[in-house]
Amino acid sequence: MSAEKMTKVEENFQRALELKKMVNRWRTSHIHCVWQMTLSQRRNPYTILRMQDAVVKELALANKQLLMVRQAALHQLFEKEHQQYQQELNQMGKAFYVERL
Image (cartoon, rainbow, N blue to C red):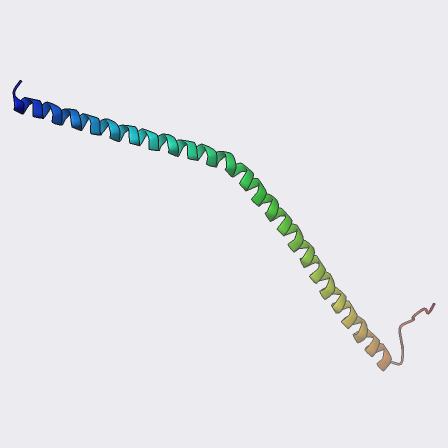
């Protein structure tokens, strides 16, 4: 073989080695990505369950707080109406019957 042909063979060989290295790097990266996705898929259900549980607890607390606010507003409304009726009765010379213990 001539020197020129040897050089071409070596160049082809080097190119083949580079391509093989590139394929190996791609395969390693692909395996790593698949592994990461698998880990992520295993962790995500637990994370989602924890988040759902936290949301349920927050909603329960928000509903409880809303109920307390509504009860306080209703109590104020009843108290205001009671005072208004009491004033109207006082103007007519009447009053509510209150039993004293």
